[in-house]
Length: 249
Image (tube, rainbow, N blue to C red; front, side):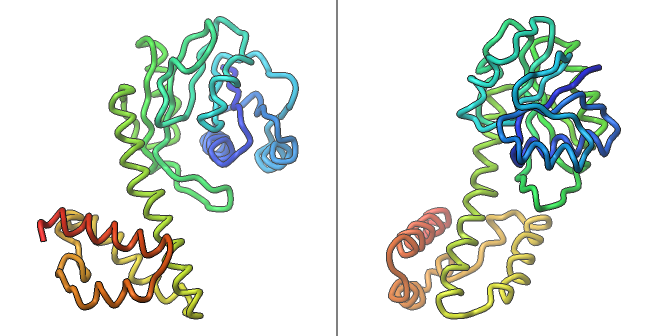
């Protein structure tokens, strides 16, 4: 079975690494960024190319959502299966006469951060049972958590991920801006961050909410607003309003 991964970014790197670590043969990794492809090739011992895509039975496209449609047109093999890894796009974004599918890993990826691939949920969508079974077999070699999903469901999975990951990380960045402005080491907040995350494994997030907004502590809310300006002030007001609305305060 010939498999090619297309891309050279965070997702492509981690998908390639997950495949290799689980003894899934990769014929090639293909992309535009030769510098990054060479790094991946040397680390994982995978052939790479920037100008010629190998013939394969399965192509996994790991590029930005904006690039998937254009990249998919590079695949001319009509007798193959092509999967993208986007959480927000339908499999029909793929342009070609080949069979279409999605192979969505629900995780945030950075090349510098090691991951336990066995815990990552994979959501599979395919045009027929044979291809679905094949993708399940591959994903099951990587992860203990493989599920089928329609595009309609996957859109909401990705939306939830944006709230739970991307927005939260942005708040971490804003929090670090505040601590840096006062020369307070951000590491002081790591135990608090760890406890906040660990708590929701045992308590519903709505029940775990603490802080001045849920207490409707107007004195503290006003004090904080006096300390902030610009985007951080707007975020603070918006978040507190959302918290108070959720608890009807």
